[in-house]
Image (cartoon, rainbow over all chains, first blue to last red; front, side):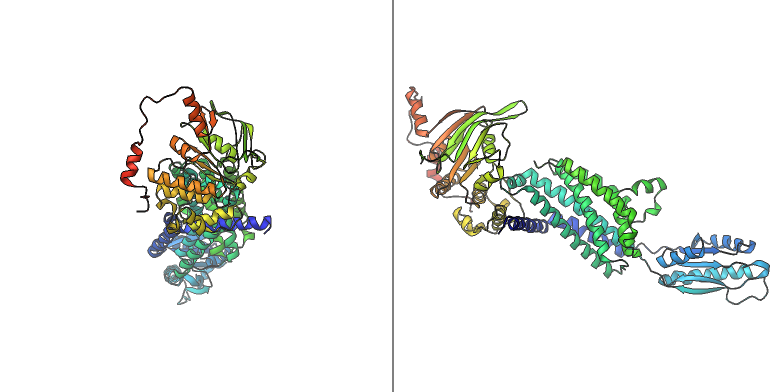
Amino acid sequence: MGPFGIRLGVFWALFVASVRMFVRNRAAVFFSLFLPLIIMLIFGVLNFEGGTTIQLGLVDDADTEMSRSLVSAIAEVESFEVTTGDSDEMQADLKSGDLEIALVIPAGWGHGGDVQPLTAFAASGARQDAQVGALILNSIVFRFAAGSIDLPAVMVVVKQVAARDLGYIDFLVPGIVGMTVMQLGLFSVAFGFVQLKRTGALRRLFATPTSPVYFLGAQVASRLIIASFQVAILFGVGIWFGLQMFGDYASLAVIVLLGSVIFLAVGFAIAGWAKNEDQAAPVANLVSLPMMFLSGVFFPRDAMPDFLASVTGYMPLTYVNEALRAIVNDGAGLASLGPQLLGMGVWAVITFVLAVRLFRWE
Amino acid sequence: MATSSARPIISARDLHKRYGALQAVDGVGFEVAEGEVFGILGPNGAGKTTTLEMIEGMRTIDSGSAIVDGIDVSRDPRAVKARIGIQLQASSFFDELNLVELLELFGHLYGRQVDAAKLLADVELTDKARSQVRTLSGGQKQRFSIAAALVNEPRVLFLDEPTTGLDPQARRHLWGLVRQIRDRGHTVVLTTHYMEEAEELCDRVAIMDRGRIIALDTPAKLVGSLLGRGFTKERVERLANLEDVFLDLTGHDLREED
């Protein structure tokens, strides 16, 4: 066995030991594997998607007096959340699941008593909401056209648009995956390593001719493998709950690994700086808690005040979650994730430098 | 046991180590012959551990030199570590691994396949092979720690206060183990603050205080020179002491296996 063979053997032995140590550590397994799973089960069962408003898109190509008052009448209906825009935007939003139904008022409608039936496009995935929406639209338009001659029986013709039906589970799983990646990197390293430092187990490694850098490498490698397993499990459970995966798993793996690298570096920075678990815990929580709630793990970030949304948009987990959702929900490839990849790249560099700066073996 | 002709396996010269305002080690030098059991004695804070750790390559040397088995520690600490076995004072191991897994892992760190069963049998821990270190008693922990320090068949075994905190039975048991290790041809360097331990085990002892060696010789000669200076104990030497009474009453058997 040559020197390279020996080194590979050392690395492998340390890697196996690291995996064993993680799997046998009940607290680590609970917090990084079962907790996200339980959170997912709870939120998956609660299912927050049962909102009562119908997402309606309005396209007013007529821009006549009549069409404008029709638009404002529709906007008054409380069941609708109205978005206006042009026809192409509406089609795109329907397909992506952001809209459930869109009404198009063609050019010339309402001009000189022309009240041809209107066309509404319904997202195939949101059948129920689209049907209710079409009924409401029909009655409003009917009332509007009531004064005209040659009244058609049906005022709104519904056309189906093939669209994704995104449920809360589709929103939740990428968020939980992001959160798990963060928790695993931060906590398994911050606590595990600080403990090894405090008890002197790390020092015992110094007494051997093997550089402790191998141990560091083995820890990182083992965490990356464990993170991949966890993501696979979360995805499996998610798919059982009806999760739809529109993107490819290779892109997903890249984001998971890049995210893990960022949070492992944060974990090592904390572990390197802290003298014991009591010092590491508050810092790790201080880092993780804001991101848990402000990086869009459980709820969309749209609901946040603008200032908060823009500030928290720079948090590492926000980039990770955005990228994961783009891949899972929209089928985005890495090529279209430039801003998120850039954000993660910058964070990876910052956290790596921090880890190197703060890390102390003893 | 000391062999006079051969090159010393350890040669420390004028070692210094300072921590801030504290001169922990202040010009320590000695030689250890192959096959010897060499003791460093001294009260807490005398600089025993720091001296040991500089020779082991665990701490940098401020000034002076240490040569172990022909290798300069400052120049190549890894090569020294590959040839020695180290039992750290209060050393701990990975909690989630059992004794066999730990020994095999440590073997790999030296690039070796080890016979874990044999190593455990040598320290009488065969029946604990699948246990974790935290479940062991104090004496068992120290014995395991010695087994872990022997995975690379070291030329020199360093033991830092191996019997501190052990009961008399466990201490005597460990003494027997150290003698066996010496008989298998390993050189042993140990620190202790128990005088009877040094007298029982060591071929030669260095007595340290405030970072310096204040005496270095065989236990018999150190006692002889003290007596030669006209020293007499105030009380008449008794033929037995309280420890003898204790051991007579409680026996020499180890209690930790209960």
